Amino acid sequence: MIHKTKEYLAHNRLWPMIDVLIFVVITLGFHKIWWMFSAQIYGLSSFITVSNWLAATVYAASAWLDAHIFRMDIVLYTPNVIHFNANNTAINVNESCSGFKQMWQVLVLFLLFPGPWKYKLWYIPMGMVSMFLVNVLRIVGLSFAMILWPQHWDFIHLWILRPFYYVVIFILWVIWVEKFGGMKRYFEKP
Image (tube, rainbow, N blue to C red; front, side, top):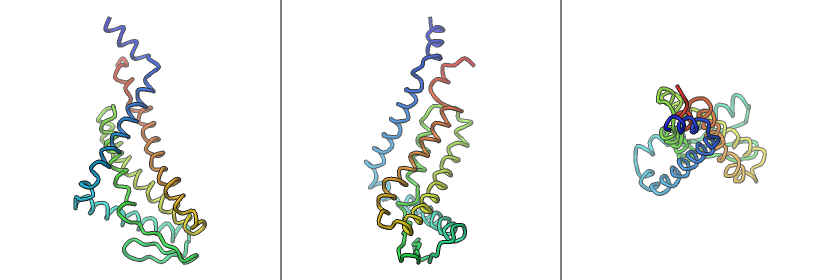
């Protein structure tokens, strides 16, 4: 009887829905806990130190790409301000732009989501590095927005490029489920 139950579970078509449900619960739970304890999180000097360091690193990488790859006419100010001479606008890359929260989200998601630890040991750091790179590309995208469409900067920042983080996190999760994890794998025959 148990063998038939395991066999049924292994071939159940509901596994993708169960995986999505687990993803949603972890993601929403993370956000709820993060914002519930945000005052305490942002009160930690170590959190602020790492966030500021990440912001400075994202600023430096983005400014380098702006100046050397995309040939934008910029002036750099401290702390972390990219000024665009084309239309006298600027972007300030502060600790809230560091991507640190999204790195934590990747860490928590893949720590809690089912899958083998031998893959989690490299996939989680790779996911966190992905969040850093996405953030650099996000700031470069915001640089273009500031030069080309400064009147739409808030919309692009809040409704296009900020949600892009979550698109990438979802893609990382889909890759994880397809290649390494997911609940169905626990019921498959070895």
